[in-house]
Image 1 (tube, rainbow, N blue to C red):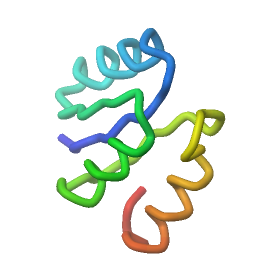
Image 2: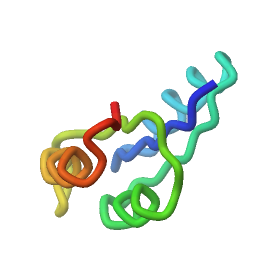
Image 3: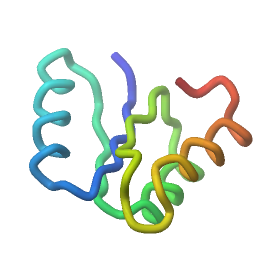
Image 4: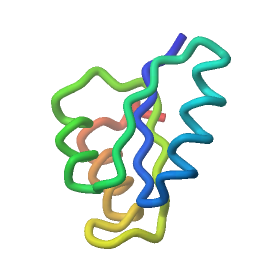
Length: 75
């Protein structure tokens, strides 16, 4: 079981990913706000990050860049 952080500004996609991952007994933390997602990333033990690339600031690319620079082991 992994703890997965999902960031996407589309609520339906968030729900779909959460339901799919929970079927395989993964713990899912989700948010539609990139800034909240970064806070969760910094304050939670996360095994996997899934993010939309095209979101309002910060973009998914910026989130990935920050995540990889601070948590290089994060998938």
